[in-house]
Image (tube, rainbow, N blue to C red; front, side, top):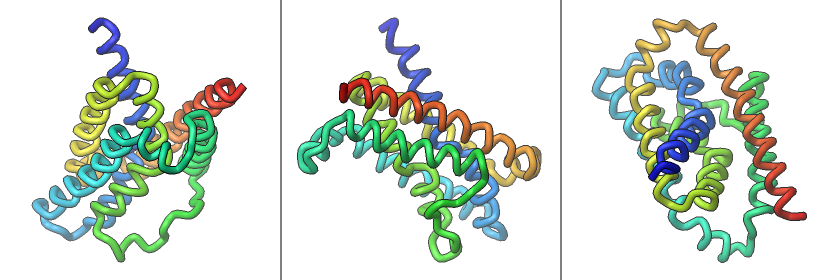
Length: 195
């Protein structure tokens, strides 16, 4: 039990950084502009539900997915770490690689849910945590991260108004650097496991 709380806190912090809901605030606010508070709250719930469903699926069925595809964890760590590093650099440098430019064709909740919140980096992290900690700690961490993300999206218009675009942008870049640092750690672990 004494290892449970530190494990949950570490996993929650890592997932929250990778989900980076603050990065989604300006996009979500722009996509839901003019909608009623009820509709905005519905879109926030959809975004978190989409991201959560994907995270829980990969938490529970990760080894089965590996077996079907004939993969092992070290190769997935390295590939996932590289993708995560690219995502971190995207956020830190403010560049877009393979992101959909026209967000208006899809509902805000779905676009924010994936790939913005739950993309390859999030899925990789969830699968790695399930290997390191089992099911309980990542499950609790995912739940906490989803609740925190939902609250941020729920109050996105207020956050955007309070922080302003400049502060939100700076926070996104700092979180991007932290994501890149986590990615390097994952890549290193995968290489060591291969050796």
